[in-house]
Image 1 (cartoon, rainbow, N blue to C red):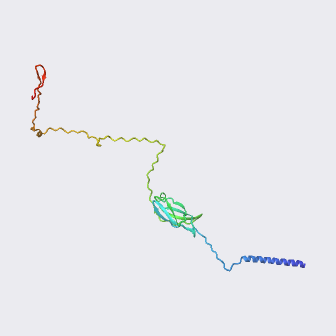
Image 2 (spheres, rainbow, N blue to C red):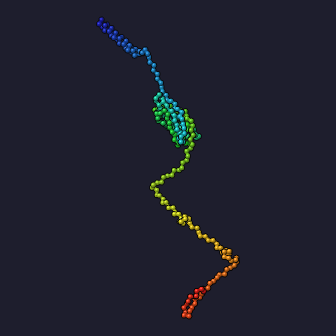
Image 3 (cartoon, helix red, strand yellow):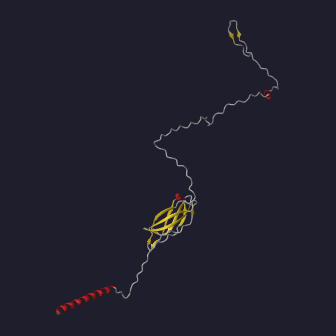
Length: 231
């Protein structure tokens, strides 16, 4: 019986030491150092868009704004730029998504065909992956004139269509050596001779003078002889 009591005593001591060691082991993990360190955590939030600057250039709208960060050194990767119509009646909004360029400023150009004939204001929405920030305040208003009506475009000719012959131009009329047509001949009414030039008095008719040629002479032999000289 004594031997059995000794075994029970040894078993009790071992059990007690095991439990005490476990307690000390856990207590060692809970021990704090003499100089505790403080840790702080900050939750980043998406920023609100920055009000953009707007300007007109050759009928287009140029929109610029400063690049934004969610944390120092962590910039947005996209921006949504929306043109809001303030015309009467209003027109549908125009939205473009712009990839960040990596610089300190970002910009986009709205074509003249998108803004012609309307009044617009623009807003910016920052984007980072699937996160979306709040929309910015609207920019100042810009008014654009209506686009001029262009001339109707002429359809190009089909090479398969037959080409109509072109008639030659008429030749110019023949001209004289001086380059002009001769004038039609003109006649002037006849004039009676001036009495002063003839020496006659007015109303006097000058009789015509007649000259009688001498008759040829015939000799007795029947030969015709010429008239004597001086007759």
